[in-house]
Image (cartoon, rainbow, N blue to C red; front, side):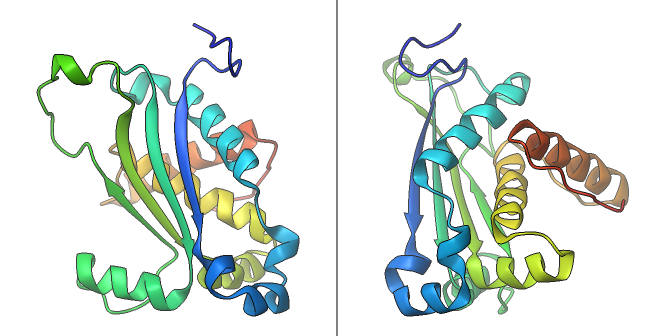
Length: 184
C-alpha cells in the first residue's frame, strides 16, 4: 500500500547523526567530505527504496525506525573494542534490535519497529573509496546497505553467504542509481 505522505510502500523513520561533520568541521572540509556528503533527505530516500526491495525480509510493522551514525575512526574503534572486542577501526558496524523473536505487544503495533543502528567511519570509507576508485558517496551507500542487511539478519560466516550478501548490496545500490563493480 502506498503512503499518501511519501509515495513509498514501506515507511521508515531515519535518524541520521553526522558526527564526523559536527565534530570535525575543518577536517571534513579539508578531506573533501563536504563534496561527497549525503544529505539526510537522500539517506531517507535510499532507505525507503532499500526497504521496499527487502520488504519480504521485514517483520510486519506499520513503519520502521533506523539510526545511522557517521563518525570517525577514533569513535568507531572505541565502539568496535567495546562491543566486538576488536580494538581497531572498522568501516561499518550494525547493531540489530531484532536478533531474537520477541512476542508482539498489542500496544506497540502502531509504533515504528526499531530495526537497530548502523555506524559508519567516514575516515575508513574515504580510504576504501580511494582503493576501490569510486566516490565517497558510493562507498557510504555500499557500507550502509551492508549494515542494513545485518540489521535484517543477513550475515556472512562463509564465502557463499558473503557472496549472496554482496550481490544483494549490488541490487540495493542499483536501485538508487549507483552501479558498482564487485569481484566475487
